[in-house]
Amino acid sequence: MREQLNNIKAQAEEALSSVSSIQELENVRVKYLGKKGELTAVLRGMGALSAEERPVIGQLANEVRQFIEDILTKKMKELAEAEKRIRLEKEKIDITMPGRTRSFGKRHPLTQVIDEIKEVFLGMGYQIAEGPEVELDYFNFEAMNIPKNHPSRDVQDTFYIDGNVVLRTHTSPVQARVMKTQKPPIRIICPGRVYRSDEVDATHSPVFHQIEGLVVDKGVTMGDLVGTLQVFAKALFGEDTKIRLRPHHFPFTEPSAEVDVSCWSCHGSGCRVCKGEGWVEILGAGMVSPKVLRECGIDPDEYSGFAFGLGVERVAMARFNIDDMRLFTENDVRFLMQF
Ligand code: DAH
Image (cartoon, rainbow, N blue to C red; front, side):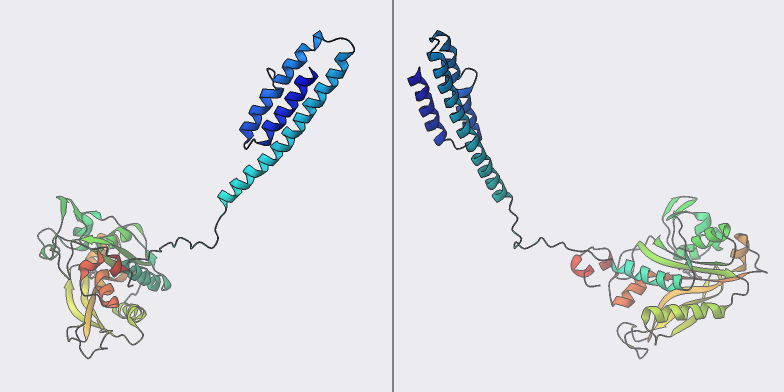
């Protein structure tokens, strides 16, 4: 039995010297020390020993068990450390590796222009108003003094949803919506999309943007309109920019004007941008018609107001020297990144 125990000791030592994983280590432990292990088997046979031999063999068996357990513990520690080292090696982060660059987008040139114009008017105490793009015929036309069969309906080729509902052809209906729900003093601008069934070309699109402006208060005059537009033109096109009003006709303003700014490119002497004119038309404006005020529940004997509507694409093309409106909607990043 002594010999058996010494064999177990030697074999276990041998087996443990070559284990290379925690799993192998566990296999060796089970083989020698487990319930059905070799050492356990020897201990079971101890009943057959004499009373003198039993304690001696018992002690030897304990020594062998202790010997194997010590190696197991030591090995276990070594293997656990080795595995940890390998894991850390794998997880190592190479801080010298080049980072992934994140490409930033930018605001669309039209959005930039709208934001800039908003800033100018917010600075003058205006509020931002909104209205629906799918609009009632009533607000788009009737309330703006454009009755059925009025010739100016032809100028604004309209997408009809049905007899009473249209895609708004201008932002002017927001004037009526605001006047019907707010009491003067009113000072708003409304940026938004508008629709006309136009063929697409360099200067036309069935979808484009306008910014409507409306001021209603006691004693508002044409002088206020001109002053306001001057501030706006200088802020957008530079301090030396002049404006010019040409008489025009809109059904919802009286008097009405088309407004030009002096050409930012040639400063008035005439060039390709202004087609030799020295001036570029950017908006329509006028004093709000008493008919419109009355229709919207405001007494024209007590209040007066001015309004204007500008084409955002036109201003952006002017601002950035863009000669084709289609570029705004083609989503070519090479174009968009330039602004
Ligand atoms: N709604 C007009 C258009 O789309 C532009 C316009 C002209 C708006 C004069 C106004 C204005 O508020 O007073 O052609």
